[in-house]
Image 1: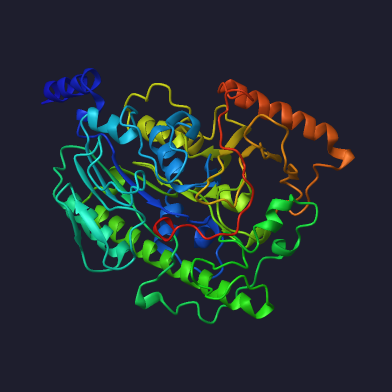
Image 2 (image 1 turned 180 degrees about the vertical axis):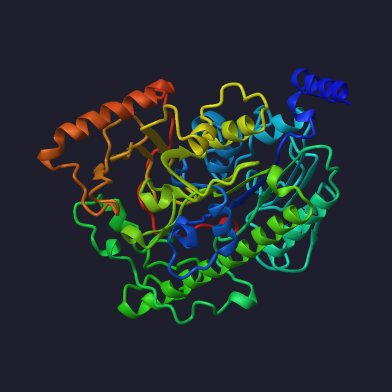
Length: 491
């Protein structure tokens, strides 16, 4: 018997790592537009998320996790490939993830894992067919609907599955899990629609927050010293006086009593998060009942942040903190951490981290780093700065081109015009330690001139390291903030 065990151990060294039965499973849950502060473990005073909180208590909660582009499709592509948007090419919400690119589920599949994706894919607006790298693929076209959504179950054609999106996606995920051979590792990705607009809770949570008063945040009225485009955005689709994703029927409306529409919107958003918490609870319960929880890497995260009135804005896209901050929680296999990591981790780190933990070869050319070591021992070098990128969209003309740098202490944001000419919008500079809500733009304060110059050079150097110069960093021409609503089909 000892000889057989030794032989098996040697085989695990020399064959593809994923073919060994002791490799950890992977449960990856991706939410859409989830703010960290909508979760109890990140400090929400009103949204109770006991299942997500329990995952954090038994795992690692990343206090400073960020997206490198705050837009759904680009961020999802970065999460999968470990690449910035300018590298993977998904710059808007309508582009396909290029089939030539490898991603971490594909790497796991090539190394013996059974792989599945169930839920919102959202890369290729009108394509719900299976994608490479997955043995089982269930998705839908476009944004999907909270109730009675049409699903294409592994290429069988679009059919309505009655019920609430979050519940149906979880049912489909559990169905797949129950069919897996426990001697072969598996990787399951679940893409939840929630809490993306239009925020529609299921009935049991529709009135949970009716008694909670919600006001516009103070920063919505502290716009002096900020770029003019922020004020111009107030009455648009992405401003607090606009339609608020159909929660306000008559707009623009800056009357004080119209804050009730904003309150209703936030209540709806919170309500959808409660169903996500229920879903995670069901998934974890199944893993525990089936004896698989301890040997499963569980990652729970959001694809990008969300502005809820900060600086007078809703939606995302900008480089401001609520737009770029994401929740990220990981329960590592065989460990009980209860740990908080404060170092800056990025969406592009998910691929490297997942493959490292699963002991599978890394994707060639990946730009991210594995946080396995800092999540366990806390040791090793780590980044203290990174850059953010977003390109102006003609379909959503409410945010300029953005290039920004964030360090542990500072943030500098500039708004390129797109043709190599001087920026036409005022830049922004914030001390994130003394001014975490980014209320005071220091960019023209002579006391911080040296800081601005240093950060400009750092940003230029980071971009140049990616061969992004004035000549090569291609982006659309900034045509200015516009007031028309986006086409109904793409909202």
